[in-house]
Image (tube, rainbow, N blue to C red; front, side, top):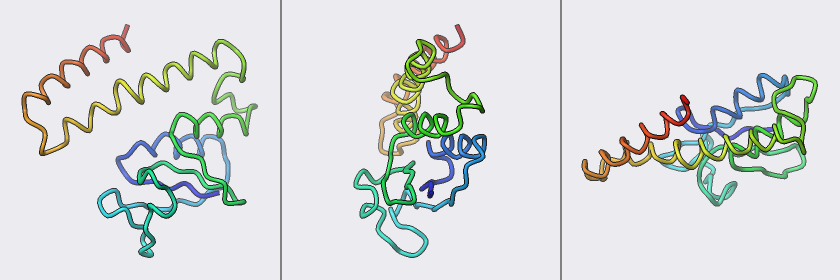
Amino acid sequence: MKLYYSPGACSLSPHIALHEAGLPFELVLVSTKTHKLADGTDYYSINPKGYVPLLEFDDGTRLTEGPAIVQWIADQVPDRHLAPPAGTIERYRLMEWLNFISTEVHKQFGVIYNPAMPEEAKTVVRTRLNDRFGYINR
């Protein structure tokens, strides 16, 4: 199994989950700037979305999107209790949180670190993020 990753990207949570699960895997570094692998392979030929994470199984099947990947990992080792059992309300609460973090928190940071984004837009996003963090704290 291979985890396509990039430091500082949202591939961190699947990386942690794989370690916690104790599953064997290989890391494959992806440049988020060039969309190339170390051997020069065009990452778009592996993942048309062009971003990480991507988990590739030994049979060549590929899974993308952090929330889906971490739940798949958890389901491989239910005795480790990395996620509530499928079909329970607790599992749906996990999905709820994973989606909230992905859409309402994580994606907002791209605006803040985009040098082409006007400062006024960054201010709006920072306010929105503070509201989201307040919700998380509550």
